[in-house]
Image (cartoon, rainbow, N blue to C red; front, side, top):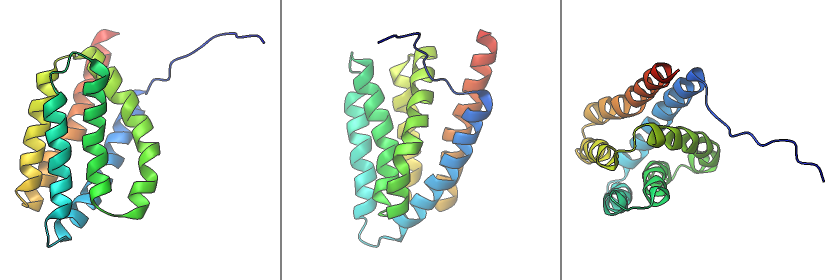
Length: 155
């Protein structure tokens, strides 16, 4: 067997922006379904994912922090109980994992992730759809743009 080389997948600036735009759109779709649940059980599932992220935010193991971060975003889609979103998640998670891993390597501050997701959760649990939409856009698109600028500065 001959092994020639190994490459690590990376996302281009446009990939990062495209993933952020798609995620925002689909996160908002998930959020509408979550808010449509009169029992509040769907919203509780998102809050439980936040509790795990909060618990793992200062773990010494970067992989534990990464997994909790990605699990929070997965929980939003899963809590929607939208079967298509749940089926689409693995493709999104692959791209999100790349972006989050690169971002965490460039900005390894665990408190930043915790603070951002706490603010996002607060907007979501407020049940104020406009506030939650602004928070999702700021979180997803804003972070993508900051990350793109960080990558440019590193070149």
